[in-house]
Length: 264
Length: 300
Image (cartoon, rainbow over all chains, first blue to last red; front, side, top):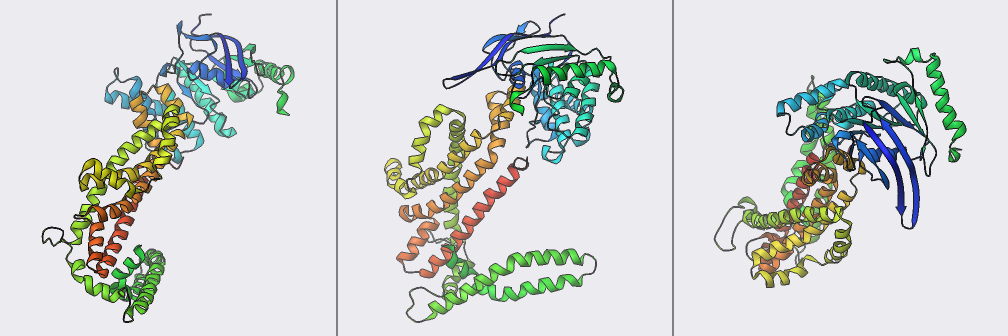
């Protein structure tokens, strides 16, 4: 397997005063170009910390992140993030929110008109072109998240990082957006790393599911290949034995071998 | 302060106006097509306008009754109007020196406020950003600010007169030093409260520090900054009147002091009315500006 994104022996320890907490221990993961990888685990296991490390928003204690064999340790548009709570800037319109990133990334390579067209192109990819002049407060949660995805896509990232992107949405909107993300992945072939705590979502969307043990000192407990052909159809999968088997494996991991102690 | 002043102006107007508010309500329903909308608008306007008019009229009547007696130390509203009629009707005369119409006095004061307040806004936002952004700047500067901001505006005046050796820059300095603290402190709070999410977005997009300042910090902290600016403009208007009483020359503060020295009590009351109205308008101006600038930010 050719490593496109490589997490190499990552440890992360948080120090507050004299107390140190080891959050992540010896995380090794390689991701191929175009692959869709999900990281699943109970809350508090450090999966968001792991994503922040890949994004460069948090530093590592040991180990490093390699993207195309080059170490990355600061944030950048090559690893665009779709944040859980959309994080759109409320004083900018939908268009301006996407344009902000586009203007920085393509400052030298695209003309003004090209950047404008590129913003609109990305908004149409997520079916949000009609809302270009609306402000985030004027659109629904699902729409905000679509704009968040458009903003990330518009930076043409090498790896798209999704931090529980559908966590704050209702079930119907979530399903709708999952389908959109699948379609986009199909169409654009992005490399995607997604954090989730939803087993169905992980199995439906991913090529591989990385299951993390409980923290502190969370490790990668198991990596599961999802042998389902794309494009995947939500309704057909419901009765697909391979799908059910994957789902079963993840559930077993999460609720039998590494059940969340504090959850009860 | 502005209460007796308000009475002066409204004396001649208020009494005929109170009944005239009623016809507005009664005329509107006569129109058939958009009658209901007009009636509603008129009603809303009446609800807002009528109660304060009644209160002001009542106060004027009480004032008139109290000060009408012979030997009263303060003039009744009717006398105030009679005495200051010329000043009200012709605010633009200029007989040289400090014998000028009220317009010139007010514009001189407003000019000083404009200079001092603009400097305070620039310095306040810059320092507030520094203190809000850097923990070390906060630790170093915040105690200093907390002490300095409690010094009364006029206490700075002798020191600034000693430093500048001239009334004009001293007055501007007093305005500056009075209004800068709330701007600094509110800006710092606003900057400190910028959500981590916005910082993460800026980091991923790789905004440089200048872009981060103009595109993230200022808009995100704008509601706080405008709170500081609004307190600041109120304080500067308070300070200018006091400072001008001491430095002399053209200005509404000195006009009041001069009127006192010549025992023109009616003129003082008129000036107080103008000071109150202009202070109110300045506050509305900054509030309105804030509303336009922070549109969208508050409602997340």
